[in-house]
Amino acid sequence: MAFDFLLPTLGSAGDVIPVVCLGRALVHRGHSAAVIANEILEEPARAAGLGFVPLGTRDEAQQLFADPRLWDPNKGFACIAERVIAPNVRRLYEVIAARRNLSTIVAASPVCLGARIAQDKLGVPMATVRVQPSLLRSLVDSGRLGRMPMGPEVPRFLKAGLMALLDKYVIDKKLGPPVNSLRGELGLVPIAGLFRSYLHSPQLVLGLFPEWFAAPQPDWPPNVHLTGFVMYESQSTPLTPEVDEFLASGAVVLFTAGSEAKLDAFFSDSIKVAQLAGVRALFVGKHRTPVFDQLPAHVRHAAWVPFPAVLPHCSAVVHHGGIGTLAHAVKAGIP
Image 1 (cartoon, rainbow, N blue to C red):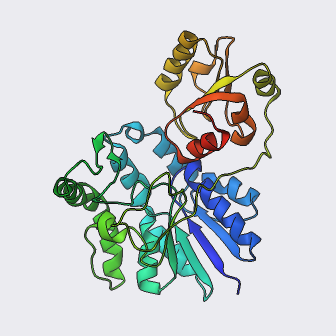
Image 2: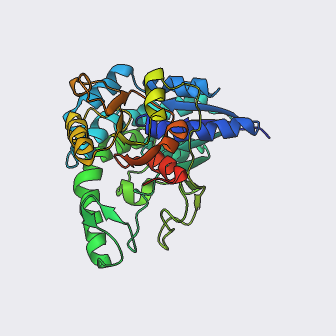
Image 3: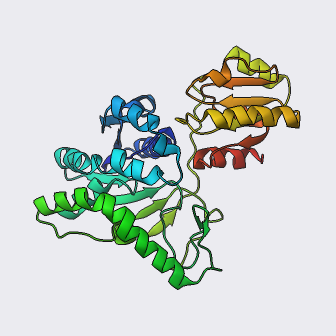
């Protein structure tokens, strides 16, 4: 039987590319698949032969990426909650309600809370898709929370207390009103502890990372299934002659801060680092800033590069912690 998959995700290219890979695999197996995301992300979905449903406007995305809070580790969650998660709770529920049929299955990122409400109200089968393990909570080992260790060396009662405070005074405070307002209209009971008890589908949680990267914990949801890294291998956009010639001239260190980052300080400091280290550097960033106007001879800039083609020419990658960049670097065998 062929199924009709809806693939909602909130975020930037790093969030939607794994979903595009998932959709492409589903289509290859005879199903239909449509990505639901901000309209700035339509091109990669269409290029992969998938359907696309806009969730939010290009202007909204540009306002998000221009918000300085987004890049502040202490204010980033509030920015994302206000500009991304909360406005799309009702929108996403309405999209799923309008498009669902007897063969519909939803595979959504965990912050797509409108999909969880559709699962509760409409009975639409749903899997939660995690591209990284950060929101899979554990009182045994949760790695780190920002700068705070949350591993086995920290007493469980301290971790439980911190998570409870975050739930009550940060997460539920920001996201509880839009979620519970819609739930109330639909005749559903209110939810507390959104990130504690509601974030993940009780039917299936797909972790798009391998076990060696984040070992399953005994208090993870029992329905977590790890697939390994899902990597975008497309090389349809060729390298520019300038970048191609630069890579052919010797090994480089690749610097990137993510698909939408506008972090001039990162790139300007990295240029100095490359000079001090005596290495050739390739800077990858979508937004061209004054930093790139007068580059030294040993530095080049590209708006985008296909990692499978470029990383074999690199001796190292300096990046923002994006899961896709990390996975490609590991596959290429470079630090």
